[in-house]
Length: 510
Image 1 (cartoon, rainbow, N blue to C red):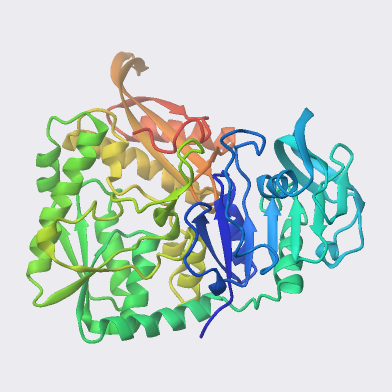
Image 2 (image 1 turned 135 degrees about the vertical axis):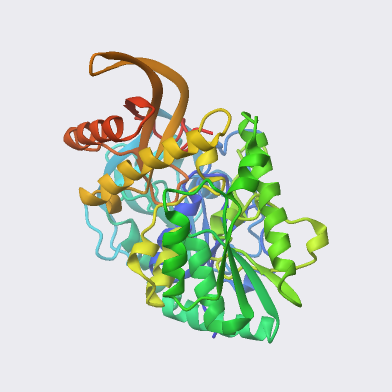
């Protein structure tokens, strides 16, 4: 079945992925392409959205998209930079704003138009620009204003071209979803039929046609992405899917046995391989984060390759690659571009494996992966699992890795994660974990002075990991968790809580 598609041209905005996700929440399939590398056939798309940008249209380096195949031929919505581009280069005027227009604003005027169906005066929107549109482009008709921004929204008469100086994709714009629906469904006549059930049915059919009777090997991680990819493949090819779950010795406490048990209940053909000693040997004496990642990647490839060779005639390697792994917006100076990250899952495979790649989830965002899993009846505990880094606890132990440090961190992590579950806080957090710091501090236990390890706890809320805020966990919970860790985990006498957001700090410490 063919679905209507929406093209999003990226000008480097931090919000571009959010636009795509908001569109998909309307059950409409959307794709992001750099403005300077649009798809060859624009006719494949029912509507086009131009994203915002950190650039100014008044700059000599302003991004100049070629809109000749789009403007006037397809419904187009220009957001922020896109709106200013339309004005500046089509007979209007853009100037530096007297006051930086950033943050919440409210619509003070709304013209009666299908674009603003069910959106009224007073509706909150989110502004983020230092330029402003002083006069509208040729044939521009004003549709909305705020107290500070006269030309907050307009359309070009004689075209299905609409433009807004605010961001409908961020949750601060209270009627942003309604606005996108008005444009896509009511103006562009896009059919909202791209649902999780439809995705499962079509993906299974595509996989069956693509793979036939070929055998496929998949490295399971215990995480959401690889598990959902496995279930889609299992539905498509059954016993021809061979799953390998490698214990690198850097998983959470009891995770290897717990996850294997969980997979058994899903009917998957899974082989568990305990290679803890091999990984610890490979990491011996390494402190540099990149060297640790490389050592883990290489060790994984060795173990995975060895196991894959035990399966006769394997033709395909399946990966849990998702859409954010495929798109990456580079800073505005280099221009937006699309690239595939080489480190996903298996860390880039050596040529000698000679396997073709199949990636059933490469069109989905993380929240969509969970919805697809739920539509297949997968366990909600597995789908609700926090993301966990591929290198595991190795990048949460700052400095070199030893079996004793792994033991300490596994125990600390177990107290923290189980505590979040017991307190009903686990599902309110996007990701949580503990970091073992390379410092010892003085403490007093009983009548004795101690000189032991310090651990940092980290809990963040996010939707996709691109940006994240630290979670304001209750003091009572932090107090109990700290006491439990110090009392129960031998070798730790101090606990701190990380209150940094991303950016500027990353979620992981290494």
